[in-house]
Length: 199
Image (cartoon, rainbow, N blue to C red; front, side):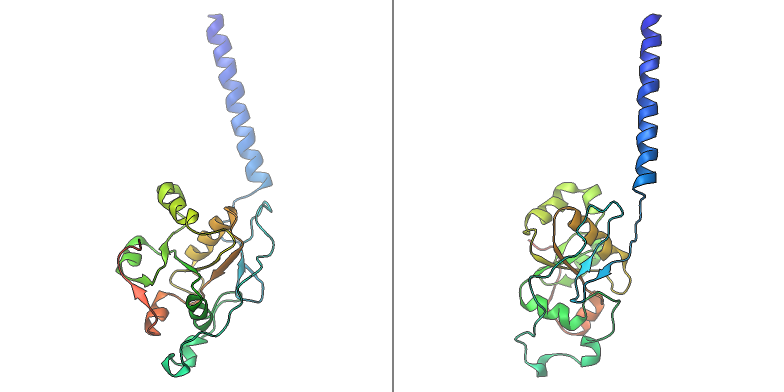
């Protein structure tokens, strides 16, 4: 009988400690699934972590420069320079980085990625870290943390790109950019695409 009372008391202490820790975490570091990105003025995005664990500024070691494609082969300026949310890359800036062989990440649904994606882009939505961590970390481990990474989804205020940027920032990536337009605009511009899964 004494053993049962001791065991019950121990479970009560463990339960109380769990509840206290959960309440403390929610009060001191509330979950914010959509913090606004910070515009660094160069097209990079600084994901904000309410706990202050992510970098305040993401410096860009790779400047956005013109590419080697002759102007006559590029689409209309209205498409290339279409307005995008503050702090995000235009289609022209994204293509320029593509021509510099930076990493691209597709944060859309898997079936959308398989139907077509930016050539050489990896598929890495933020949810993959929770549903198939081996696959997610396979992508993470294939890129150096100081690499320039451009993340895209359907464009505009798409949360998928922001969520993936936050996950990568929490794994030490320091130069994350979000493409302000989506895959459809990339296709409309006639830029390189692939189908299926990248090796």
